[in-house]
Length: 216
Ligand code: DC
Image (cartoon, rainbow, N blue to C red):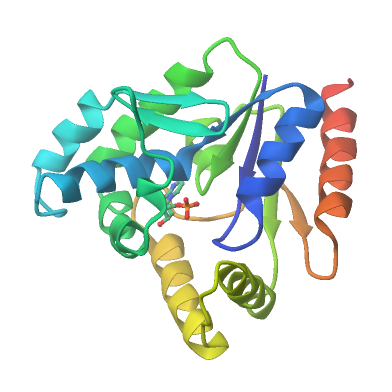
């Protein structure tokens, strides 16, 4: 059984989805980590991110999600795929339709026969259109940028709200206008806006929504 969670960057999807999966006894699939992993591999090999070779990387990628860790061919890359460099370059990979095709096939293979909360941008629209419950998790651009600044200050990085907002607007635009797998709300997805709601309130709300849909 599949529950999909899509939405823009900074809406709190990853932490909420992980917790939701734990609460309902499903596994969690972080599909953003998959695009990040291809980007990390391509940068490590000094490949031009726009060249065809990246598709081969995506095709042969041995990615394993183990608890909170992401492993590539046995190596723990959980932190390496979240560096500023990877974050800045990942959309070049995510824009590639051939890479997306491989990633969607891999997502379906990983989730086959299991109970998964699958999180990303195109999970309810492209990867799992038959999902039993689809959530579109979002928040206003200002709220998302403010949360990002808070996260950064927690790790000692002082960021300018206006700059964070501008970079985020840029990412939103790229995500929404991508030719293949753009970020759009599936027509049958339930939109949840997280402005002014705590993490626990959002998770509780999603647990209720999923239970109603799944009948558990
Ligand atoms: O959610 P994230 O920041 O880890 O995602 C990393 C990048 O991958 C971001 O540019 C959006 C893209 N992405 C995508 O295009 N499709 C997905 N299913 C998941 C992420």
